[in-house]
Amino acid sequence: LDEGSYLTGIVNQVTVIHRRDQLRASPILQERAFDNPKFKFLWSHVVEEIVGNGVASAVRVKDLKSDSVYDYPATGVFIYVGFQSNSDFLKGQLSLDGAGHVYTVINMATDYRGVYAAGDIRVSSYRQLGTAVGDGITAALSAYRYITGG
Image (tube, rainbow, N blue to C red):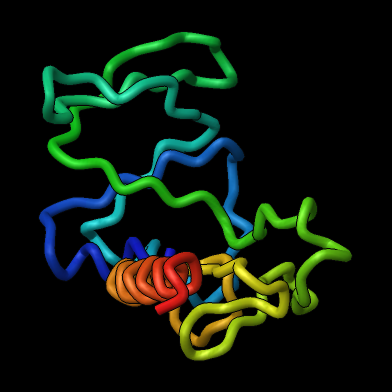
């Protein structure tokens, strides 16, 4: 909901398509979202497909209660699925915090030589697109230097 709240400052409407019939976010984030007229919620739905010819015009959604599938108009799509890191495969190989985020140093190197991490998977204070892009560039340049010996 934090990301959606940010987007409401940029766009006319943010529709949250949620697979359950209630949120698990903190009560304060829920209250802010429910009080914001730019938020709309599609409960008990999942996205099946982004529809459009080179540019999004809709998302095909499935209503999990009725099994009906229909196109919901959308001129943009921002995909965000929770906070759980998909890093179980790294356990025992890299240093992870309690939430499964990877520890890195300033050049995005991990404690395993030649392995770099970037974006939301790493331990950091911000989880934003801009910082993830910066992390990715830093990791790519660091990996290049590692590979070329530069």
